[in-house]
Image (cartoon, rainbow, N blue to C red; front, side, top):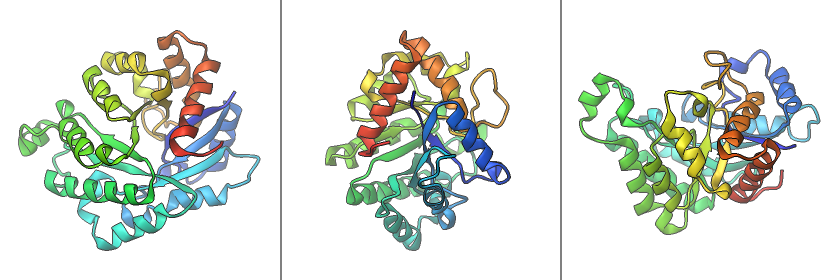
Length: 283
């Protein structure tokens, strides 16, 4: 069996002491490919995921690692000319198969202004189109934003703004990508699918308080779904509250397979094929 973790932050400090062991456990759980997300601590360190892909290339003791690179919306104020040029350089690297995670986030009061976030998002979508690579979308629903953030950002809705910008500036120009850790409504899932995007499901699909995520996981076409950890975050039940790691992609995959009424092996094969097709790679 071959399971792909399509979104893990392997370069985060959480794994500084035991990354080799984490990767060994992933292999033992049949997680044989990982997409390491290259946002770092900000633009100055977004190369670290690419460096991990190079470090572990050819290792028989670790899964195959691919990388992305991008400027997270919380770091949008730092998306200056130098940072965008660095992203263009990374986008040309064969180890970097996607741009992201990028998007919009009106969830926290101290996030950059919405116009700053949108400008950074548009610039990075342009880079992705230039490089002919998919994008990985970060978007927290504004419905769950902190009260202070709701007061600051007003009626603006991050999901609505994001889908509009993708439709106007990316999908219309042939761009494709992934709604990472999909957490929206069934209607938002359908809108994303209509734009040609894939939906990736993380550990929060196992949380009972989010029935809309489960609904999306059931309605998504088989050829448009992925599974992920978003490690070190969002450990699935029964590990909720612990540090997440790529091995637990299997737990989420088991849950999604049960939701969809298919064997785990079938879901694993389908999501692996989807990953290979979207990122134009052979795992």
